[in-house]
Amino acid sequence: MRILVTGASGFVARHLVPVLVKRGHDVISLVRDEVRAKALPWCAGTSLFQHDISARAENITHRIGEIDAVAHLAWPGLPNYQDRDHFEKHLPDAYHFLKDLVTTGCNKVLVTGTCFEYGMQSGCLEENLATNPANPYGLAKDCLRRFLERLQETYSFDFTWARLFYVYGEGQNAKSLLSQLQHAISRGDSKFQMSGGEQLRDFLPIVDAAKYLADLIELNANAGLVNICSGSPTSVRKLVETWLVNNDKSIKLELGIYPYPDFEPMAFWGSRDKLNQLLKSPRNT
Image (cartoon, rainbow, N blue to C red; front, side):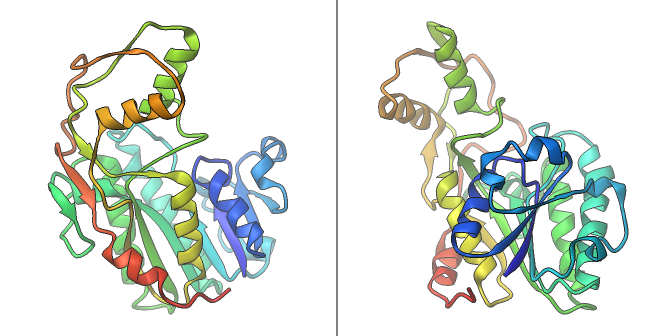
């Protein structure tokens, strides 16, 4: 397939793009800065396409040619989940961009969503639960999904909403927990301050998430909502302690320094039932 990947210079793309290239797909990496992207090793073997989604250029397909699928990973402004720009600016930009692709012939759309769409619901979260986002980022993502589902009433295209839980690994945001832990160790800090660490989350290595996303792009199906998760609850404290052991690192954890976030519940994780079922389906490679 000829696949357009947005946000190609970002965390998820650096793992997804090489998987797609290795599987023989013709990948077009959409970036805002082509010069910078040329230095990114994971963009090797792809065609670079410089474009700013916020520019709202109509009919960009005449510049890149026909595509079979788009993997829309781009989303500015993270990890500031509370910024109103998520629904005032980034939401309409993303919708108009994807609508333009669909109306000019792209018949397969995968978009990465977020577990924040579920809001303050606790326990094992299944795709059929009603959403109730508690922050602007989750609200914007949830609205984009609804807009695209409504667009399917007019245009025929396969749609997968890949709802990411807590992916981690090489290249993640410098403000993420494990990145800050690594930086503290590299600075030679004796202590690492964090929350109490008892909150339960669904953590998934990004290398696994990238494989699942590639599998879903290749599916010959209208998959709809799919949780991209491990299916197992793990405490934040255990995640940190396990990382220290696996990487043979040592630092004293100062627990309880920071409060627990008020925009997410203490314990939630994803159901993998639908993902497991879809991965058994035949792929169109």
